[in-house]
Image (cartoon, rainbow, N blue to C red; front, side, top):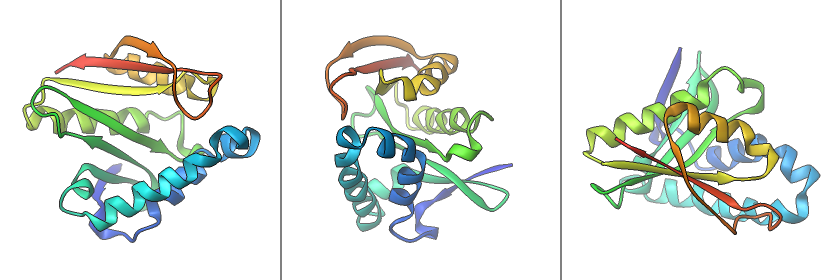
Length: 164
């Protein structure tokens, strides 16, 4: 059974640790494109734990039978028009079981409770993110646009949207 926990029960560093493990393949095989993400992840981790009543309220850690398997995050600041889904991270050994989708559904539920009308999420066109692309579509998101950007200039960004 999955449990979604507030970050207050944990220490700073857990988020960057989960991201580093989740993206280890990209960091090792395509380091020159993804090395700067480590600094972004560290900054995000610091912001979450230094601002527990704002940013920290928009992040939850996910455990399976007391084992940490990932986390989800979101940005509701454009409420009620839309909310943005941020990191949706599942450790590699737990992928393929629908846990990432359950995290997305948890975020969508929180958006609905907050009266948010649309959800927006984006991911890279990089082949590493094909499972994420399929997951967003299976959750009911529709592709809205593609644009240049992201850590790897060879691949653009895909933005998805869903009415709530």
